[in-house]
Amino acid sequence: MRKLSRDSKLATEAAKLILDGRDPVKDRAQVLITLDHTIATLLLVAMDRDPKKAVQMFNEGTVPHVEERIMLFASKTA
Image 1 (cartoon, rainbow, N blue to C red):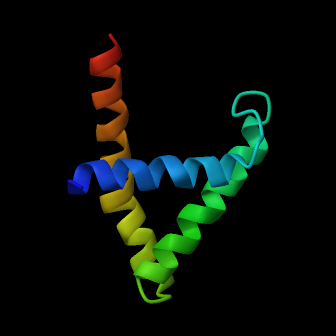
Image 2: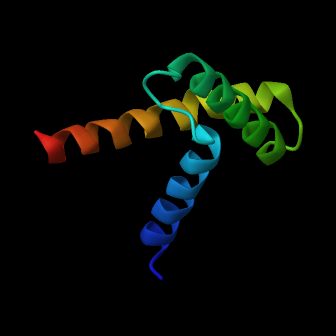
């Protein structure tokens, strides 16, 4: 399986776990709290439990890449 396809499949599976049967619109606040917790946990694990590195990775790596993915989605659906 190509890496992109595998990453997309993993992201979809993670989203299903985060939603946990909740409505993503109606239950938006609770879903986003779970997402925040998940992101923080993964960043801390990936940065060897170093909070400063985790925040730096979030600001310099995660946010820009998430923005890119959202804009790619927007360009494909427009």
